[in-house]
Length: 106
Image (cartoon, rainbow, N blue to C red):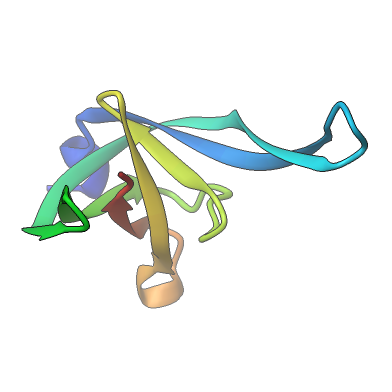
């Protein structure tokens, strides 16, 4: 069974762009960079209560066929949730698939 056949979820990779603000400062905005098929596999999750807030930490592996242009500076949108990319690994360096390790952003 190939990685491509297991990639049954649609994700969007977003890339940060700096734009000039109204008063000359920089403002960060995110633009859609790539739409990809991926296998999404939760790794772990935990909940903490700090500063009167319920904080959730969820780690997810996303496997993407091929070797698209994705870096740790990008982020991923999946099912209306935003994930920060922690690491991007080209497993075995053969461009068969990328393993993208992500953390759910609060």
